[in-house]
Structures are given as C-alpha cells and as structure tokens.
Length: 461
Image (cartoon, rainbow, N blue to C red; front, side, top):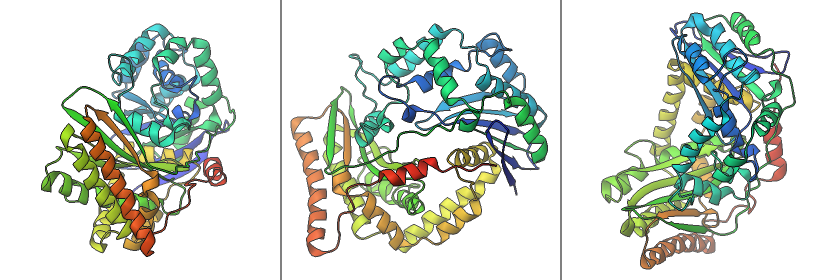
C-alpha cells in the first residue's frame, strides 16, 4: 500500500509526497505548466528548446557533462519530456540520494546556465528534421492530425516547433520564457520513496526554495467548433500510407471522461478487442492498428491510426468508420464494458508497483488542480455501464467531427474511394437521424466558460 501527502511550499510549489515503504529506489519528478499549448506560431518550439537547455549546466555545474556526471554518480538517470500542456523532469535514484536528487533537479529549474546554445539548437534541429521531407514539409501523421483537429488553437502546434523559429531563438528568448513559466506557482514536485513525508517535504524545500513564486500560468482555453468532416492528404513516396482518424472529445474535467476512456478500451485494449480483431485478425489489412485517447483538462482527442498498403486505405477507412458508427448507434455489449473496466482497474492497482507512474499520476493531477484519489477513480469505473459508454460514443463519433489525415502515395481513384467511405459514414447517421435513432450533439463541443473553469481549477496545500 501507499499513502499520499499533498502540500505546498512557501514559494507556491505544490507537492505530492508518495510514501511506499518497501521501495528500493526513489523517484523525483518536477512538472512545469508549460508546453506547446502555451505558445503562438511565432514562438512555437520555445518550451521544447528550453527543456533541452536545462541540461546544459547550472550555477554549480559548468556544462552538460558536469551536470550529467553529477546525476549519474547518484546511480540513476534524469529524463525530461515536453508535452503539449506541461513539461516533466524525472530522476530515479537510490533512496538515500533523494536529497541530492532534489538539489540537482532544483538547480536545473532554478539556476540554469543556458550554455552552448548553438550546440543544443543543432541537436533539436535534427529532432525536427525527423518529421520533415526533403522539401522541409511536415509529414509526421500524428502532428498533422493534431493540427487538423485543433488548428488554429495552439494544441495544433507541433511540440518541437519549426526550423525557422529555432534559428531565431536566442538566450534572451529562453531567459524570458523561463522567468515567466518556471515559477513556484506553476510547478509541482512529486516524490515517491520509502521515506516519511515530513522528511521528503524538507528535502524538496531545500532543493527548490530559491524558485521565485511568480503567478499561475493558464493556457488559452480550447473551443472546438467543427461543422463538417475534414480530409487532408499529404503526398509522400513510400510503400504504405499512414492513416489517422481523429475526433475532438470533452476533456478530463467532463463528467463523461471515464466513459470516454472505457470507450477507447472497448475499441482497442489488447488483441481481442474490436479494432485489432477486425482489421488484423479477420481482414489482414494492417500489421498493427491502434486507438488512442489524450485528455487535456478542457478538451481531448480520440484517434485511430494504422499504416497500410495504398490500395487498402479505402477499405481500412470504411471498416474503422463502420466500427465507430456501431458503437455510437448500438453501443458496446455489457461484456465488452465489463472487460474494459476490469483491465483499467487492474492498471490502477498495478500503479502501486511503479514509483515512476505514481509520481507522474499524482504530480500531473496536482498540476491540473485536483488531488487524485485512486479509490474514487475505481468507484467511478464500477458505476459505468454500456449505456453510459454509448452516450460517450454518440458525443465523440459524429460525422461532422471527423478529421481524416492521409500521408502517402494514393492514386486519384484511391482518394475518391476513401472520400466515398466517409460519405457512407455520414449517410448512415443521416438515416439514423430520420428514424429518430440518433440526434447530433451541440456544435460547440467545449464551451469557453467550461474550458476556463477547467483550466483555472487550483488547490493550495
């Protein structure tokens, strides 16, 4: 078992201290409320570059090598990731090194050296190039899909940014971004260890106390308003076409958030669920197919993705849309929901064996202004039934909110047949509308007032 103590430091940093007595390691995770969602087209990629630059030394470590050497001498490794709506810095160390780990991560956040900018920009440039073609066009299907679902909102911006922005960024830009977002009231530190919470809280304070309090930073609320299906095709030579079908969803703060998660698991959570069984086992259309759900505080995105032979694209799209329509109009079976809930509940229980996951889950929930209680999450799952999941499917899988992204080498006939598959999806719902078996949801998926309320939620320890 584990216990969690939430609190805050005098400079506004929120803390989540997870006590797990049996552990033989400790995890320190710092979460900062900044990412591509907080950017504009003119500074897109700055949060990601700043995350890289924090590894380039601190006030007490002259360069990247000195900092990495100090981290690795503790026995562990430090990793960092920039997401759309937050950035994380995470280190796993032996339990007796928690204090030193807090000091090192705290120094990175509080007193970064920002040295060797040209070297780090060269590294980030290579990262950006991985998603571009020879003409420097963005051809990453996931980035293009997010752009299609959310543009012009910043959630549609690529996390790594653009080459043009990267070339323009200077240390002055980085320092200003750091000063604005890396402040106590915009940071959460989560520690999972075998130590008593009081001791850990003192160690966190020692490591992060010099961070200026600042103000909480809120991103631009998302207002998803889509009236008709969108199809975008990006030509790219190759043996397969990448297919993404994306739908905007309500966010983590919505009442139906858990039902949407179960919906995703009904469709694809293992090789026996609908998507893999039909696309791979029965039809052999793809080596692999996936369905994913990403929930932000105020909005989310549900997508289905696969890479298939060009001639298989129309059949793939038709089959996937048929499955989505089945779930929206007829709903899942009780057995499917029961299995999905059981697997989700097992994952919640298994968190207790993973200190990294515990620190991330409790830390991100604190950053989003709520105190996570896993028992209540499990109770909410137990209350779900097939009708609740069908209602979620009817909100999400509507023809007017379909976003289809195709990256590959399709002929005119293959494109025409793919468009025909999306029309068949729309016509199926039109017939259901005429018979009273379905009605379209509100055009505005996330209303501004609801989005602002979700984003501004905050607790103090």
